Length: 315
Image (cartoon, rainbow, N blue to C red):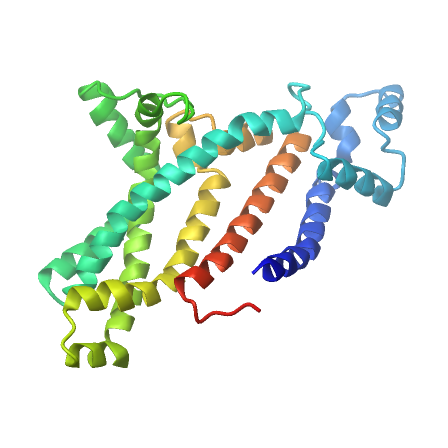
């Protein structure tokens, strides 16, 4: 297993290098290049020359890229053009909030989607199955911002049970306050992904329930619950885990709309603020961190396959 993880990490290096080059090239793709971003549109030639030398923009592009990549590998992502603070510090303040929201939303999605998928697969073709399929389509079709607004109107405005604006409270500081501040945006995202989870898991379960080994187990007299729990569910989890990993990575990348509705201080809002202020060093840092997060989650999913299905051997 250690050898497989090491090989996967080596395989990710070319992808990371290619992506980092594209991220760095973003500065040169904007009108006026990096100098225009730094000095503005009405800068004098003297100001342009000063900024060019100050930031080393008169050097060859490959040299600049190598310098930026070397500093990024040590955690130095530069400084924000807007706040003048280190980009790594700004991301470090928002990333824990996004991870906490992503994990909470994923747990809610699993708690809703998995039981419904199992019940739907075991009663396929019935009115209950059709009702759950309709609910899954509704969960996927309703915009998350509309669900978020409805939850705010119900629980914050009418019932006054939860805050309308969600802040970040670490779980280890106060689990209760963390839940109060996170439950509305997490439920908004969790309701959406529960439809995805239910649909994919239901399809996998139905395919496994029609397999030959299930008919053999039934002919031997095994009860239905034992067949589903011990055999069917484990085999159906392989494609399902991939979907869970993709959704979790997407949340860590920033649930922009939901964070905007609840004013949640996560990565999504940080990226939007950086784009609005044309803060390209901050945009570059956010995209790079999100990219690394996607890669690490995909690697974790591949490793999890081995524990779900021992027949998989990565050598």
